[in-house]
Length: 216
Image (cartoon, rainbow, N blue to C red; front, side, top):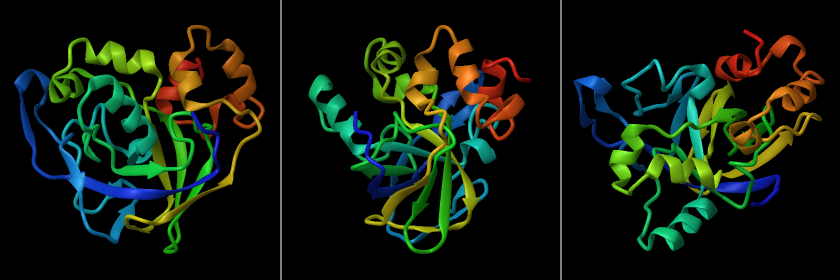
């Protein structure tokens, strides 16, 4: 995967329709994201026109935006033998030419020219709803094992986003702990020590990340 520090948004995706998933899983899912013409406003809790049904596991300031790389979709296309449309993985932003699954936690992205600033917070954890959407055997395990999990982002400054917008990494913490690295780690203590350089006692980290590292 690339370590690029600049790229672009290829597609902006919001929920098209709620999918029924049964009362055990909350009754409905907003995973059905599809491209929309921009510009689309982005605020503290996500994109205008988008929504999250299960707020326990999705949404909130630390998961306001989910990004996935077109390069990773292409990688999956080759292995699954079928086309994968933008938004199929439930991502709000499909990107090209930059690090996403291997983005550094806490790095800040400038998106477009309307002042939108996003910060990398945590990896996406695949779930049963995602597996049903993909209709691929053992999808959760395969997706997790590949490490191409995308990243959640918080909104530091609101703005608008549209397909074709440039994305620039304007700052990157010195700890260099990547999203995919945290996701795959069995022993989190070395990562915790590295993160302490920029996040004393877990300050500034998303709550699920603090919990995993023993800071909450």
